[in-house]
Amino acid sequence: MSPTSTTSSATSSSSGSNSTTSSWLVQGLLAGAAIAAAAGAYAVISARRSARFRSQVIGIIPARFASSRFQGKPLVPILGKPMIQRTWERAKLATTLNKLVVATDDERIAEICQGFGADVIMTSESCQNGTERCNEALQYLRKKFDIVVNIQGDEPLLEPEIIDGVVKALQASPDALFSTAVTSLKPEHASDPNRVKCVVDAHGYAIYFSRGLIPYNKSGNVNPQYPYLLHLGIQSYDAQFLKIYPELPPTPLQLEEDLEQLKVLENGYKMKVIKVDHDAHGVDTPEDVKKIESLMRERNLS
Image 1 (cartoon, rainbow, N blue to C red):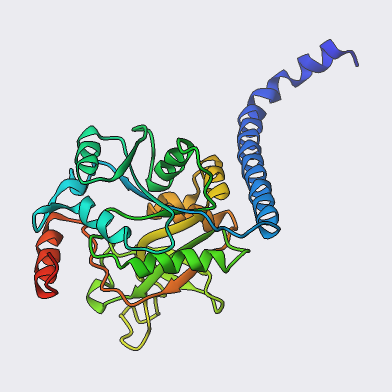
Image 2: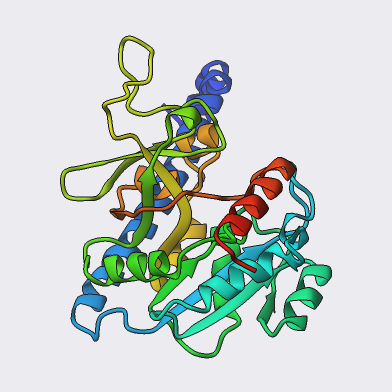
């Protein structure tokens, strides 16, 4: 049969198969991107094992003014000081950080931070989350760093020992590209979607994170005997993996839970988790400010 007659006889069926072909093509492209990123991450691990392991560490406090839940949160006063200053002062006490910067897309935040002595890196408004903001800030630095610590600006009472803990955990775990911290979940926070829960395996690696209670038993009730874990916002990354992270396509669980760390797990990378004693006094809503100030007064923290 001639090429012309083949095209003619196939015309009636080609329209029906176009959408299927396009769908498979898109899926193939996404899979290819994920595979390429995975290959890059594997190369990162191999190269790191033969070098002086992850010795240079930078802490980055990503901050944005526009927030759907609490606009202007980084600048809200906490006993007379902007919250981001409180966080910066705590982070400065960590012994593992070689450098500490604030990354923001807002001139108001930048001006305040420079006023109390912080180094500031201006980033674009297009960053989708704190991880992407950390990655962009890293590109502007001349010095090379091995580990990037993403320090949440809404944790004004974060202990510097927790920062040191996640750094040391990543340094001690060559098969992990990411580390974070958890603490005990209070029963009254079991159903709070702003309190992210975590489950880990027997070796201290993350299995899953959720805004719902996990694990969830068949009775549907909180088990007072079970040691539920609350995820703390701080997390650290291998610096080379952080460059790969934005190339990974968004994943279904990440989008459903609105938790950026799930993209790491869904792509098969290991995340080391440490458990710490911490009251987890993060600021998610305006009502949390009064709670923080009350606690600081009780602890005589100025």
